[in-house]
Length: 482
Image 1 (cartoon, helix red, strand yellow):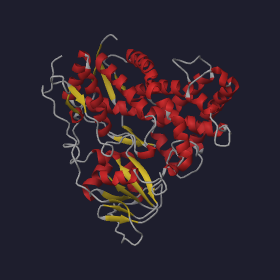
Image 2 (spheres, helix red, strand yellow; image 1 turned 60 degrees about the vertical axis):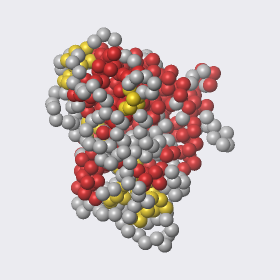
Image 3 (tube, helix red, strand yellow; image 1 turned 45 degrees about the vertical axis):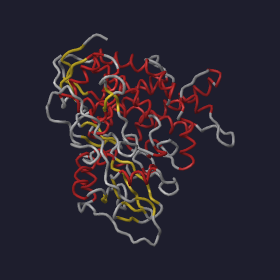
Image 4 (cartoon, one colour; image 1 turned 120 degrees about the horizontal axis):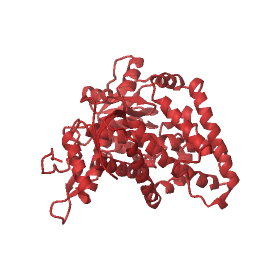
């Protein structure tokens, strides 16, 4: 392959934003609210839902580091910030001073109140401690061989010289991984089994969530505590299979020797020695299945979408991966980080400040919902020069003692945060990164891809995630043996 990139690497280019005061202040501090988008609440909601990337970047350009946003899901406006000092003050705050607002998340009607994604306070910390071990360290490494096998099988199925959407194909891979980790279902579950039926209905739910109709259904359920209509019917089908699997696993008991998340949760006991109820298990499991594979799949789809419109980066990735060695590993890691910087799947995370809080020149009152715009944070030109460009070299530097090899440079905690931050940072981050490394390397090694249209795909909001508008459409022009 002829290299299309310059031979020299651009050194890691993460910069430093000017300091900005942030944190709780005394109640006597005079309030000063940031500027507000004057457009109607419904129009802001539509723009945020249909073009979340452009919406956030436009607001940052127009209003600066801090502004106000109004959505129909909440009567009061949100304050939005994208300065790393402001982010740090929120992520390091005591939970009592700046708790998460996930209890009001659009996920609440779907996942219920018992999921680690929607719970807050002591309950959230208890669940987090319980769930962290299966998603870290050696537990993640055990999945790598399985991830590789699943990725290779999926690539073998891709049509040649035919356009298809990559996002659903990535969902198939990540769903297999999360079904293994959460339920202990490796490979294809036995046809007709509870695991097979659960997997099929989850895929149907995800397929429905990709349709234009789902946006209307989601909007109708946004302010409800329980889902109704089509959403309620779909979740009822999922619940039947989930509760059936919970009953089966309870019957097996601890003697089965399983080490998946469901078995771990069934064996868990609270401070009073009581097990989790079936409803608590259902909420936890559904959150892990939906969030645990949806975000990773779309991160992969976005990264490939960006690569295909960045010929130099794509050529360099393929050359280095096919050559093997540490340079290829470093470039894969940098490419994933740049993909998640350039197109973060979660555009915002929200905290409720319970005390008056300073954000630079502004002071907001207690009980103000404050959103961190991950999109705007990742596109600050003082942190990431030429932020709209796709440049994995931002996260690369020379490898020490190696005569010019490449080394990955880890970004700052409060400048790169696609997994959120603080005590709410995604507990599946390690697994998600492992999946992306294995799958992206397999795609680069085994395929040559093209995008059918040169124009970049826009992002649109689906629930709390930003997805490629057309699913990251690609075509395989060449495929190589595994």
